[in-house]
Length: 126
Image (cartoon, rainbow, N blue to C red; front, side, top):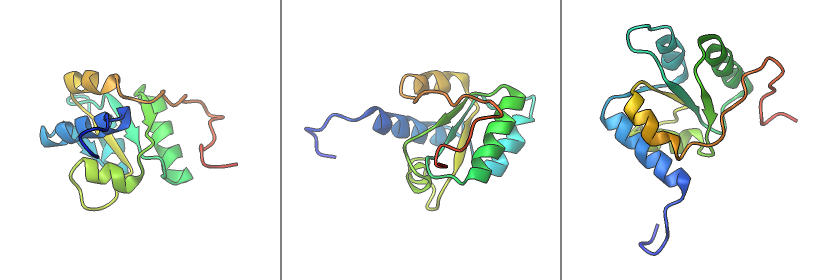
């Protein structure tokens, strides 16, 4: 991005996610996020899912988020972009935010929440 370009909300979101990762206030990866939602001591406040996750991964995340009452957001960034934003070399399908203050910093850049209903098909399915 050249200095003349204004950062998009997605750029700001990914940058703030990088800050959350450096502060160790993110849980990374679908299995870890699902496990962390059960933790009462350090609960997951919100889950952010990459745009290119499989139907199975999306269902798993949306079911867990619905059960535990955690908001789920589907980003426009893919798994590689999300992984790069949080400092990983590989793909990351989902991250869970565990700090309220950092979640509030992310809120203004987040896309619309995913509605958590049983009839919610995977967005990539036709």
